[in-house]
Length: 378
Image (cartoon, rainbow, N blue to C red; front, side, top):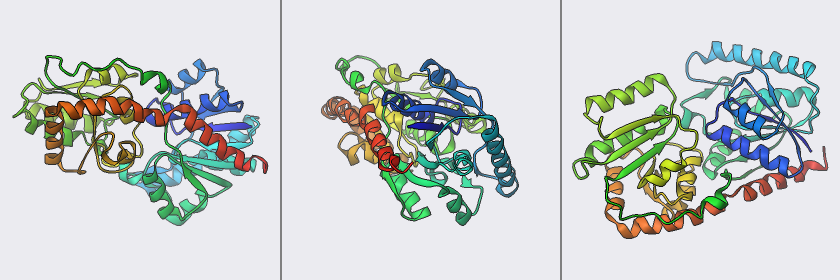
């Protein structure tokens, strides 16, 4: 089957890493895969390394926060004519168009012009996690969403519930994300839980308001009363204003010796191995690849009881859940885990076993099953 995968960006964060994993898996399954991205970037480098054809073509998303009426109209018109010109210039043979997120309509336009079936792989809540809204009114968004629609894949049950309520029930299924090499990674050496040093906590995410860094920092100010040497490492980059807000909070509260901003790290696995606790404070994380990565190397996870995080943590079986927005509850859960050697050992041992449920083979087999359901009608 000839597939065109559409990425909303050329970066290399969670959604783009998931697209890379899907592309490789589909190629290994015998599909003819090409990927279109809106600009040059780290994703193109990785696709080139994997020998997957990449087309760089300018287009935009269809989400916004401010001035959506004006900016949204411009984005819609630009995407429409950009895609039309793309169809005239690029003679890519395609059976199915697969859009990696719900944040760009470029794949919908392409499937419309080429009269091909379209698959959405929805990896975000939009408003709840990104603080954005669709440019178009709900009815218009829904009509565009279902142009040449044949299937929706959601990366968590929480996301599925949201969009089935938003658009109405339609052909869809939940297929969890996967991490490449996770089968090998679960064979790590046991952690030295008795090592003599300060306790270390890690957060890995893009720096945006909804990721909950301020909750972690506020909790830290309370935790330092009990653990004065506690170190919080924050990995990621993102919104400039929000980053400055975090830096100012650290400075104003005298946390410079207890907070380490690492910036973007291409592979944070080594940091996960070195830390005692991984925090997932995102207020509505659709899935959370980094949560799964931390579990895969035996780093105990404390996560907000919202979005897709409870699903990964088995609603408390494979990690610790705290009440969303409740800084005091987060602090208490951290203290309880740091003081419970037995619970730390249990999560260290059970985390990698849980991670096996999210192997690439499981995910690709499910996606291939979806594709075979309508292959005969192509």
